[in-house]
Amino acid sequence: MNNKLQRFGRALANNWGLKLLALLLAALSFFAIRGATSFEERYDVPVEVKVEPGIAILDQNPRTVEVAVRGSREDLARLDETDIRAVVRCKASDPAGSERVHIRSRDIEGVRGARIERIRPNIVMLTFDREAEKEVPVVKPKTVGQPLIGKAELSYEPKTVRIRGPMRRLTIDEVYTEPVDVSGRIESFTREVRVLPPGDTWVSRIEPSRVTVQVNITARTVERTWDAVPVLALVRPGGAYRVDIEPPAVTVTVKGRAEIVETLAADAIQVYANIPEVDLNATYELPVTVHLPAGVDLQGTAEPPTVKVTLRRR
Image 1 (cartoon, helix red, strand yellow):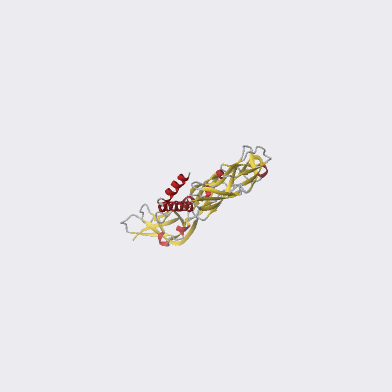
Image 2 (image 1 turned 90 degrees about the vertical axis):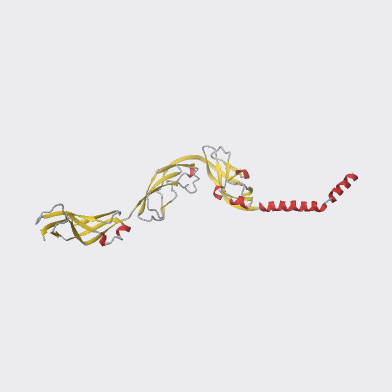
């Protein structure tokens, strides 16, 4: 035994400096790795409870728990708080009963590359009721913001949804949806929006969970009137005629999108009477045509709509 101790002592004393350095490096590596993975984040996450068919949750306390997650800075940066949740399953089969359920680390979903340090509280108290179903109308979705031009008009389908939840809590008469953002829109579009769970009623299911909204962007139209717009005659070229027009000017009303009509200049409007044939000293009653700038969606009318045109030799 003494020989073994002596040999161990000699082996330990041999190159003792290198052995001590290796021990120090191992210790430094251990604490460096531990330090690199010792970052902690806390998340307030929802608790989802899976129940047997025919049973609904009447009361749940708590609805959220605090989950402390530990890992490296990179691992924690990759986590998305909206993906983290606690999912537990209860074994209750009596719709009039209650249950106390423990939340364990394996019940936490959405945590990858990190470890669960603690859960507070780690117990959820549940009270049950019989599950019931009800059909309720969907309130017309609201809009957020304003279109760049015009106004937004909404239509949506379906108009009703079926909800399931505890019998004693299904007292609601309507449900709402997420709002539709129409900020800066210039064209009509279609959007699916989520039906929002109604408050504290503990609705377990909404079918369908989304409605389709058709948003029609309708431009604001206005009318603008110009008085004493002269009427021009369109005749065959080359003739030496004098054209008398009665009345010589008309009133023009232009209707269209507000942002176009309000910037329309008077010299951009022209009124013509087209003379198809030449018969000297004859008087024609001809319709007048309002010509507006090309490429714009405008409508123009003249008052009176016709004029009397007489051709005379110069």
